[in-house]
Amino acid sequence: MLSEKRELRSPLDKGEVANTLAENIQPKRTAAELFKRKKSTNFFEGTLEWDSFELQRAINHRNSFLPKIAGNLETTASGTKVSLKFQMPPFVIVFMVLWLGLIGLSLVVSIWLYSTGENEPTGIMILSAMFIFGIGMAYFGYTYERNKAFEELKRLLKAKEITSP
Image 1 (tube, rainbow, N blue to C red):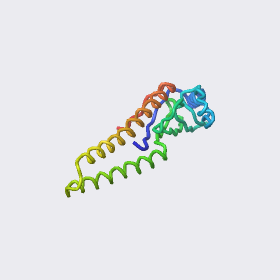
Image 2: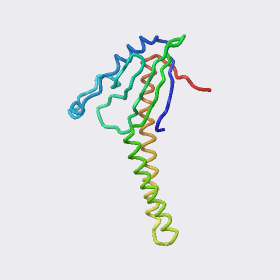
Image 3: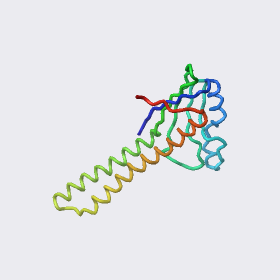
Image 4: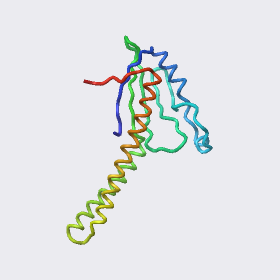
């Protein structure tokens, strides 16, 4: 979940893929533009070189689980292979590890105290719910955004996913 590699095969040649990406990637908005809620003009924002790119979906709100997408273009006999790497932002990974770690530690202590008769089961239930909610929020928030970006890239590049046997 923290990092995932996927590949697309597009019938377009490398130049057409680069042009299509260039038409659909806007420069990353500055903090002032985000603060003023300046609407994005493209589906993605980021940078594009001739054979590589870094981007993320351009949204008009905050979403900590928005994946960073790095990609490389490679010419093949049938068009272009697009190698993608989706990654959860590093700050979010660190925050979730610390948050879930503290909740997990509290849960273990709460279970131990309950086994000695010094604690009520209510604390265990609340901490368990918080732990499950945290994992679910990170998993589903990231997966939803990753799939949305992946499907849009497939559509733009008229590509199909290359699956490993």
